[in-house]
Image 1 (cartoon, rainbow, N blue to C red):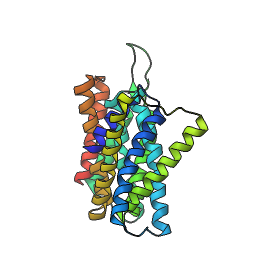
Image 2: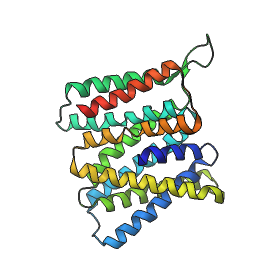
Image 3: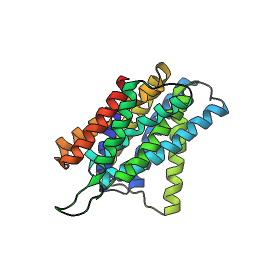
Length: 268
C-alpha cells in the first residue's frame, strides 16, 4: 500500500516537476525520518560487509526509482507499474542460484509474467499503423531490474539492524541523486504548494522500505519480495480512479497476465 501510493504521487509530480527535484526532496525527507530513528535507538553501526550490501541497495533503489518515476511520467501508469512489478522475478532467480527450487506454480507465474510484459509493452497508436513499444515500457524494465536488486541486497543488509540498513540505503541513494543534480546542472527548486506532497512521498516510501526490511527478516525474501511487488495494483487503481486512465484492451490483457503471474509466484 505504501509503495503503491508513493509511486502514484511520485509519478504524478514527475509530470510537472523536475524529476531530480522530486527524488531529492522525497528521498531527503525519508532520510531525516530514518535518521531520527537511528539516533534515538543508538545501536552500533553494522560491519563493512553489511554496509556494502546497504550501499548497493541504495544504488539499485535510486536507479530503479528514477527510471520508474520517469516511466510513470511519460507513459500510462496502468502499463508501466505492472511491468516494474516483475521485479519479483529477480529474487526468485537469486533463490534458484543459491539453491532454492521454485514450485510448479512459480514457474508458470514467471512465464505468465514475462509473457504479460511482452503484451503490455506493445502499443498500437493508430488504426492500421505498426506496433511500437509503449511509452515508458523500457524504463519500467530498468526499474524492475533496480527494484529486484534492491530486494535481494536489502534482505542481505538487514540482518544486524534493519534501521541502519535503511539509513545507509537512503544516504547512498541521496548522495547519488545529489551528484547527478550537480553533474547535470539541474535546479532543484520546488514550489511551496508541492512540498507537502513530496514530503508525503518520502514518508510513504521510507515506511514501505522499513516494512519490507522487517518482513524480509521474518520470511523468505523470494516470498516477501513477490508480495511487495503487488504494489502496482494500488498504483493502477489510483490512476484509474483519480486520473480516469484507460489503456487498450490488448494491454489490459497483458497487465492482467503480469499481475496473475506475480500472484502465482507468491502462491507457489
